[in-house]
Picture 1 (cartoon, one colour):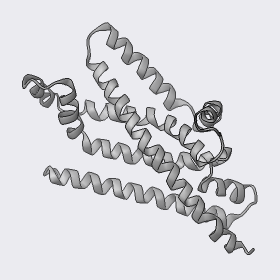
Picture 2 (picture 1 turned 120 degrees about the horizontal axis):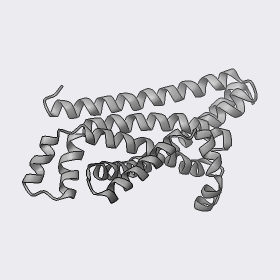
Picture 3 (picture 1 turned 180 degrees about the vertical axis):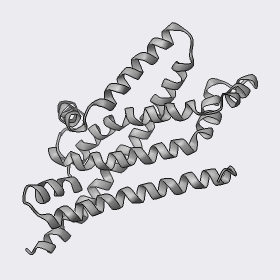
Length: 223
């Protein structure tokens, strides 16, 4: 089998594996991070001692989760990943550490975005008798939507880079090709192809995120 035949045989399948890992982990990360970020925001605003301790605890967990290098995290989670999905190798197994690594990151993004919402808008909703759930779903999230979209875009870009690193422990995807063929077999062409595809994915995600943010701002007359 020639050099380029090997590339054409391996790259399409591993590209699909990367898209699978990133898309599924992005979905779970954004959902989990959104919920955690809302809880952080709500407990931060409470004056009662119990909620302050809850915020400090959750904030500490988020900070620890964000500070652990992904290469260490993915190895540390191998037993739990094996228990959860039945294996610690492959694209499905890689989704577990990818999700756990990205949830704290996006949660902090959500908390920051919600804190940027004008307090006068929130106070007006409280005066009108809105419940806490209504304030979150009809005021905070809609008002912070442009920042949330930008945060989602950044989170997906981070997950693309993490998915490449997952190839170190048999996670599959383009990172697996870059490590097994580009690095271990000194195949510069394979390394170049995988890097170009990863860069293309990043540019595509960033372009889509920018377009969505611009559309939201334009509808609001802010762009």
